[in-house]
Length: 337
Image 1 (cartoon, rainbow, N blue to C red):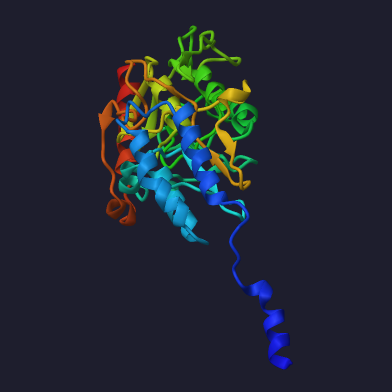
Image 2: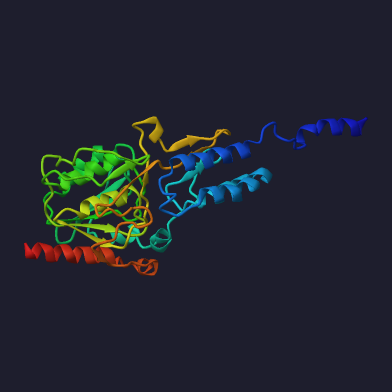
């Protein structure tokens, strides 16, 4: 009787076959979503039908957490730094990071940067940006991301503080993504006349957007250096490419990570977030930006005007070659004016 009771009590612990195979349903939904909206299948020479044939049997037999390993591998096939999925706990997992990110992720160190200042940097309320004035009256601004409306709200005050500097270093190394609106809030403060935007396509259709217009009570026209590296990605790359077209701007550092896929919240069909049958979410971009020269941001990134590599070993020694070169460059540009 005791044995029977124990066996009865353990019934709930015995794994039972699911009524429906949500793993397989999730796979079908992911494969179809990518097939329908992802813009780079041809560019990346991906035979998506062959990918289906390889992964469908693996999803059929996946059990428990093994599903995530197969799911992760499937999305990693895209080699797209924007693609993510959520776990049951809600956290976002990115299956792929560009090689240039791993090369340069230790090439920037905020503590090393601060050692070049004679006073503390000012940190914005959002913590997205910090800024100050380097020796020689050179302004410095580090931007860590373009999320929410932070730069729309805070950048005017930052630039007002720095407007009397002889030159400005905009540091967007080690940068996260963000919104087009925040990018626009920054770049238009350096424009003295209207400027065409980098081409954008959503679901294969060119989106015609009016040119950028100069914004704010003044244009910052003194020499500007934009610092980039392989960890500069997404909105940071877009910012770099736009700034690079302006006459007072020089881009210094190393080629950016190469993330060009985008989506939009304007139309439902352009939204990148997608819910799977199990309730998990994925992000698959529905469009892309092109550089002004017609090349893709994706994989190519944005090259600097002047390449100055920076290694983690140099940073560990307290040296920031890219920042030092930028400071010297602005001093030379100021003398020549």
